[in-house]
Figure 1: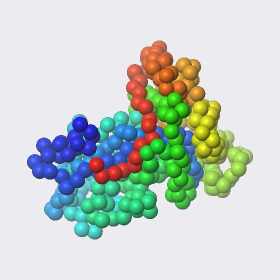
Figure 2: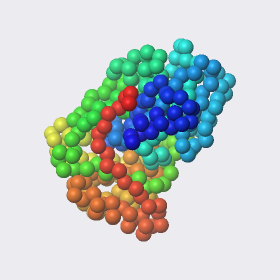
Figure 3: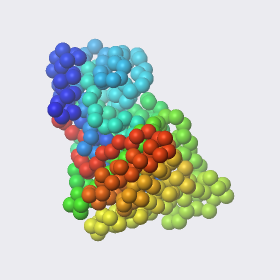
Length: 371
Ligand code: GLA
């Protein structure tokens, strides 16, 4: 049974009636362009085949009732209560969209996007919810409409949930195309879909989930964002610089160097993909990891060990993905080498007493859709 089918079934079991419809949105992995979205930079994410599905039925009494197996149920007054915890991602989208005529909903959520793995499970929930409301209340869901929905999801996350994230995750969850990575210009929201068919080259994008928690609301992500803003106040928009600025403050200098060099790496990666030289992404990924580890300081031993193990076992390149401080590593490798790399990552983690990693293969997939 698919995730969407399960959502419809859970809805019927919990609420005793069929939903009006089921919508889903994917998790994501970012090929390159990390910690540059909130600096108006370029990034190159792709959607995962893993999705979060929401089965939705509207209500007319102002209540929002949410169910997700393994999480506390929510039963809130839409116009009175503030919804904390996981339900905030749904209530926040309703708040940000502020749809005329919306008077409540019952929603069942089912997902196979790993939670806390840096694969944007929260953006998948926001995006699925936003598209559901767009369909039910006739908001535009063409390309421009999806950009607007993504922006509403970002407001939900920033202003309702209180996580100061950029916009990459919500944009890819709503706008991804199967078989493509999406070159997103975070300065203006423009997206270009770049064919990315690693599989036909015998190459796999392997995601190594280190099993170490990753949270965006614990302050460290926000610290980095504030440092980038401070660097930009001194040096001007980092996006516009062709080389790293010579700032007096050594910390800000390193943060800015990451942003400027990472944006350049995105351009290099796009050139490599356009030339069909997928394996040449490897050194670009490695350089990104070094920059995130040394200049931006958002890696951690679990991520470094997984990336090193993957490289030593034959990956062309490997880097941490997402916000950092835990979460996942992306390794680009020959498909035949996947078992060896998985074994190497497991062995390396066990040797350091780290949690046992888990794995998934990232095949570029579609954005949010009605199931
Ligand atoms: C998290 C945020 C994104 C982005 C990445 C780092 O996933 O949600 O907006 O900043 O971290 O690239």
